[in-house]
Amino acid sequence: MNIAILSRGPKLYSTSRLKEAGLKRGHKVRVVDYLRCSMDITSHRPKMFYKGEPLVGIDAVIPRIGASHTFYGTAVVRQFEMMGVYPLNESQAISRSRDKLRSLQLLSRAGVGLPVTAFAHSPRDVSAIIETVKGAPLVVKLLEGTQGIGVVLCETQSAAESVIEAFRGLNAYILAQEFIAEAGGMDIRCLVVGGRVVASMKRQGAKGEFRSNLHRGGNAEKMKITPEERSTAVRAAKVMGLSVSGVDLLRSNHGPVVMEVNSSPGLEGIEGATGIDVADKIIEHIEKQAKPGATKDKGRG
Ligand code: ADP
Image (cartoon, rainbow, N blue to C red; front, top):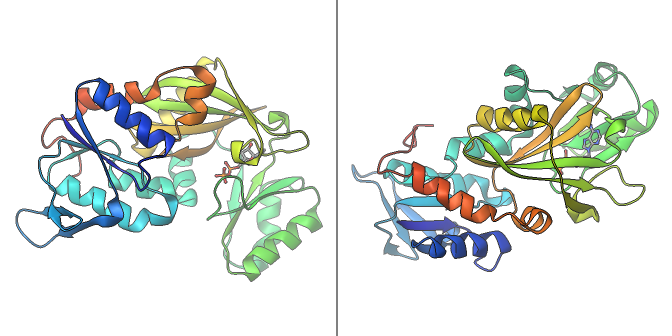
């Protein structure tokens, strides 16, 4: 097969591992910087150009779209869909997963376990959302935050009010969430490929840190998950419509709750912690799924 990895960094761990795994399984693999793709969207035969030259003969694309380039990156994936190229994750599913609030609403509608979460536009409704999550301690999150930045634990009601007012004063959207203290700074990352959890690890925050993000000094270890955690991760990926995703769970007193579903999960942490060749499993999944015209929504969204 002829596979293109849509990534800005050929040297990034995940990108280079996916390329290596594809080559090893006998495919032609190239890394394409999606910001250098241009498109002819008007013709009956949609076309893609890379650095000005027509890009043809691609059977499958692996989108690795950075959070800051979701808009253009998903347009490129959509164009490939219109051309009948199989995308590992579809453009609509990627856009959906990048909107935290929309994701939580979709998961909630499907009955997937979530922390109690509230959201408001007006600073005048701050006390209502604090009440919804049953008061302090509670977690306030910037909707646009990643890697744990903008995730604040508010120990008291007045701290929560101040933090929410400050963020809203800067016109930043936030959500308030019940604090899952019993998670003890630990979360579980499940790598879901084609409806199966192929690897799982726990991430533990540094001492005194409730956020488990590896970027914040947390450490990762392989972990066996319960059947309930497994089915929660698989369902969350399915609701989001993602073939490959990283589902983050917390262990709460009311069962596993989903924090986030990531459409471009990093492979370095999970392959390092578990020793599992996740990249190989992803390529194997593409081999099974990618048939000409196999994209479900053909760029309709
Ligand atoms: P980001 O998307 O920026 O990583 P998350 O919402 O995943 O932000 O939060 C980062 C980390 O903070 C989580 O992995 C988890 O360890 C911790 N955390 C987030 N929300 C809660 C919560 N409601 N209760 C307990 N811990 C939380």
